[in-house]
Length: 373
Image (tube, rainbow, N blue to C red; front, side, top):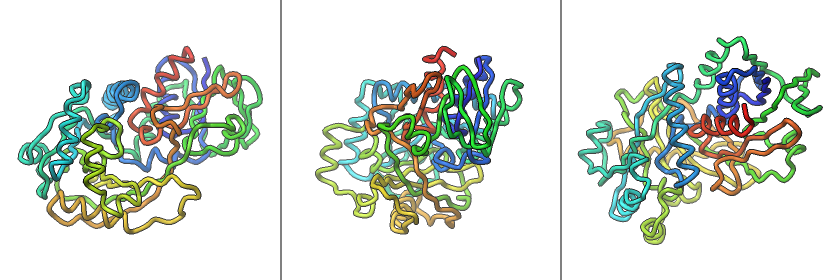
């Protein structure tokens, strides 16, 4: 079988990976010299803890297994099973963590409620103020800025894999056939469009009623911390954002504890992961209304800095980078991804939202299974 994959972000690259692993010939086409979208502009978290029970959690857990397997073969991914701590500061926030611990799938996630001393035993860098932490053992991390590059380096070892950068696919010209902006036609047994947040042009022509929206975020990265941050870290605002934490206790938190005004205005949560160079990736905001701003705002960064410094009990290192990113999310956020046959031999896979980095290996595996690769 010959598979044409359009898009070299993490979802597209994982589709190429599974196709090559199953013995097929793959041509991967990318309109940039390399992917520059949401696949690089994220935390690199393999985030199991907050996923909705059922299909979403099952997908995340399967993806976590695949990330570990692939990471053992491709050390450059920087895979590490670091787990996460969601820090709580009062009884209302603690009650949400306790409710999560009572879920029937809590053991599958590796949940445990820790006191401050136990949390610091796992992550000694947390010298600031908090009253407890929800530990999720199954969470992990990779290096988002370089993961696709290392995956592609490994793919290039196969004579069945070809990478064509700097080419934008413009037309579907027949079953399993597309034409790029160089005028070249690429024909296979299947074409999989993994175009991320690029929802215009050809994607709109093929799927004009696509139930997917775009979401914008802001993030930042610091200079090296100077010590290990041994786990990923979240704050209780993440309880308001992730579906696993929905409960009467969360309703009480929302009713009785207003979110800090800047966090509320920008639909914020704290997520934080240490990079291989020692710096901290910190975020994030969520913007849904179009048109998106073209600049980044300082108030969210000030809020994040205050929250992080409160947990670390020390000043943050210098901020080295700030950025905005845009990802595609299914309008029905309960859906893990939108997968649709848009022409004979042509499928569109898009809209994983903030799950893209986490779930991409399992999303691609399911595509391969459904298409009979």
